[in-house]
Length: 188
Image (cartoon, rainbow, N blue to C red; front, side, top):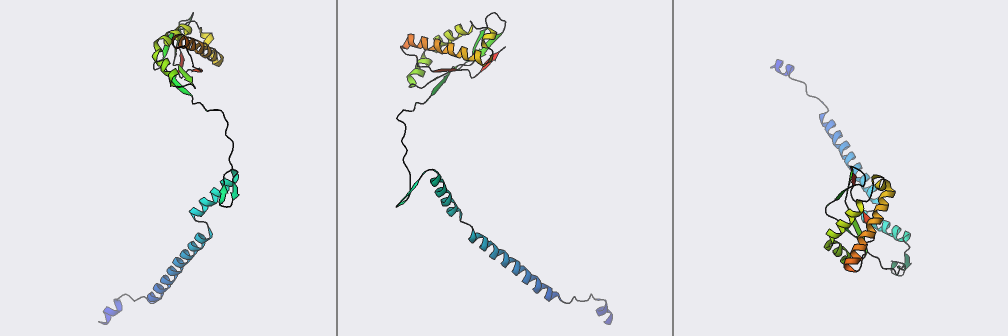
């Protein structure tokens, strides 16, 4: 029996002291984290207070004045001019034509804009076939060099604007188209 106690592993001393020390250090770290977080949280603004501060800053920049009931907006005079909405119409299929004196052809999408009421765009839709015919007639008179570059496209747009308005005036008594656009423009 004496041999059994001699071969048994020796008990480590100080295990209880280490355990208490670990608990004290852990509690100290947890408490420090808690009080540190509380300190920093109290020293900064809450999100709601931060939003209110930003609103006050923006209203001061925007020209608000302080009244008895808090900030009040300063009214600005609005222009008397009515604001018109620009409306667009794009022909559903691209137009394709041969260029004058060339084996190349031009394919382009045509869009129109107006600031008048929808009656103008309804007239365009109703007379789309006639307008496409007029546009193709104008396109067939242009050469490759006529349509190259931004200046060539601008001249073509001006010519098409005149042709479209002329046809609408003839058929409906009023043109109303203000601009012509080319959403697609391919020369091959």
